[in-house]
Length: 109
Image (cartoon, rainbow, N blue to C red):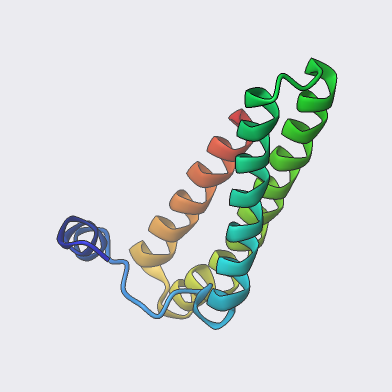
């Protein structure tokens, strides 16, 4: 985490371990697979592959990143929001607002 990330986390009350921490290795493996898909797209464009074939791969890559996002969101709800629910009050309200904003961003993408 960079100094800016650490400052941002402290400012917003985000302290580790995070909900995804237990699955970190699996998440990194999944992200590397997605990265490979994106590099495959670059290769396809470089090799002048047919448009529809590239679009098919774009769709697969998009679904993969959306599945990752949903998994991360679920872990946030189970860990961060659940912990805030135990504390109650403004902490819970803040975590619910964060989750709602994240869902809204996912729906717009």
